[in-house]
Image (tube, rainbow, N blue to C red; front, side, top):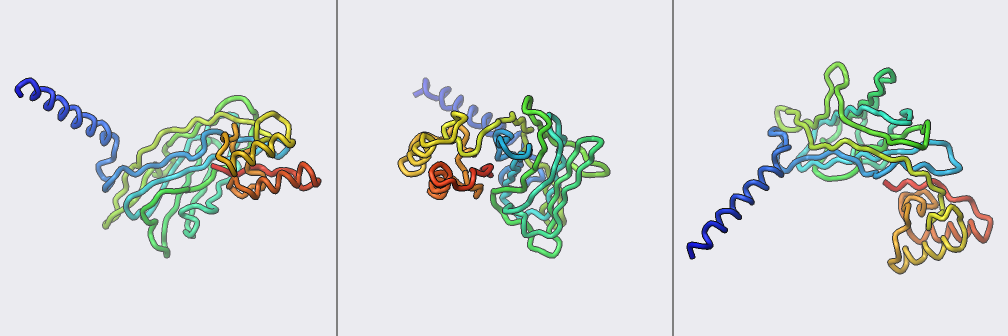
Length: 248
């Protein structure tokens, strides 16, 4: 029995150590679980044959009611800022949404503040999409938090009276991926082989397309049977060309 005691003690110490590491980065003013802000997009997808614009999706998680969000980004890479869209996001219902770009410093301030509306409820989902114009297809776009004069920093606001805290965040680095809309198998051609690939993926659990956004042919942010019909019409019936996908 005595031989097992050190093992139990060591296991307990290990659990305590791991727990402290998991929570070490949480702002002490953040109530409950650690809130987060991050990105839903692994790359900057550029659709061949269309204007050189692409987006990065921003997501956030909060486990308590949030009364305001401020998020300033520092932008670097072979891109120029184009616009910010809150369409379809968790904060779309708010009238007071901020998208303020400082051209001289390449800083973008994004914000959402309920004024006459209900606060942002607990949940997880999209904050916005940030659209960029590509100046080159070589290199990475990077997005990191920064200070936006006169007083804005990455913060969520909660509680009564309101207190701000910093959600957990990891800077994003996004390679530029050039793809051909409708080229489901990434062969640089759109033909019957892509139809077969898409049917297997959608209907039979086949392999995921190498660049999934290229399989969202109708641009509705989903890959399903409607995209199969769209692709068949394009290949065999002179239908409209595939559109840029909008998957995150």
